Amino acid sequence: MKYAVMKIISLESILVDLPTIRAHKLARQTVMQQTLVVLRLRTDAGLEGLGEATTIGGLSYGEESPEIIKSALDTYISPIVIGMDPRNVNAVMAEIERHVVGNRLAKSGLETALHDVSGKALGVPVHQLLGGRQTAAMECIWGLASGDTAKDIEEAERVLSQKLHRGFKIKVGSKAVENDIEHVSKIAKAIAGRGTLRIDANQAWDELTATRAIAALEAVGVSLIEQPLPKANHEGMVRLASRFDVAIMADEAVATPQDAFMFGKHHGADVVALKIAKAGGLLPTKSVAAISQAGGLALYGGTMLEGTIGTIASLHAFASLPQNFPFGTELFGPLLLKDDIVQQRPNYSNFAIAVPDRPGLGVDIDEEKLAHYRRDKTRSLKPVAALKQGSA
Image (cartoon, rainbow, N blue to C red; front, side, top):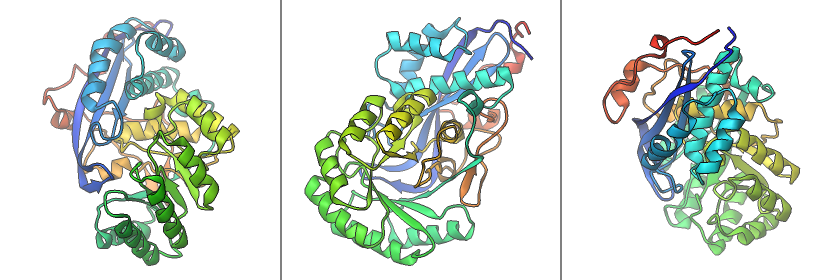
């Protein structure tokens, strides 16, 4: 079906609170419940675009909390986009950039919804709008973050036996470094020869602590060290990357193409964690990836512990990139949640997550679950099918 004219008639943002299957212990926060900001962009053609903007631990990760994201969308972004053609993603996002500084998570949710409705209008998956997927599935690792060594080993054994994950990331930094080293060493010994390990300090260490910890973790077989230092300590990251053979990855320190340029130029890391949320959308993520690769940095598919909408949006972007992902992706967010607000969750099998091939994102809202988990406990607007159909 061809749409000659299409305009955005509404942009709704909804706070959704979903419980996790267990405590997810980070260096600065323990996550027991994840809050998603779900976007529903409606058009006069009767099509709806879905988006998601999700952060980790309120304000513990960055400057946008779920409540701040919703406020930016409702108060400042929504009035700008009403009446614009959602298929012209570049024009809409350029207009937003003219009026809204920063707020990359909110912008990412909007840009995702624009791509979703554009794909639906053309009858093609989002990855085709980005140049096409270069793989049908991407390896997906699992985050071990219960904070309990025995429980983490039990989790690792379970997902290995189910062929869900064979790569693992361990959260460290909330305890004394000696305790973290002991914790990681026991897990490394338990899965030796069957799985790979990465650790994430979430900026928790100073350079002296990081140097001591990385030497010990490298010795027990850890293959990747993520953001060991505060994101502003660029020079320290350069020194660590040059000192150790184990791969050093920048996460919080690299959000923009300019960040990627600096880290590539000075070799502040070996790997860059891509996240559509911190980059501000799918297209900016591709820019960060291109600059990173030009600077000799490998790519990694990161997560903000999104639900299915944000996870699948990230997957479309990552799958459209050259497959320089030696450490895979960590798009396990939906598996960490007890429930979701979609009709069908992602397909995880053979240690990977499958890239959808349906129009748009390939995700549909479960209206009853959305009504149950939304924070305001009210039902959303009428289903999009009830809206006036535009010219075809």
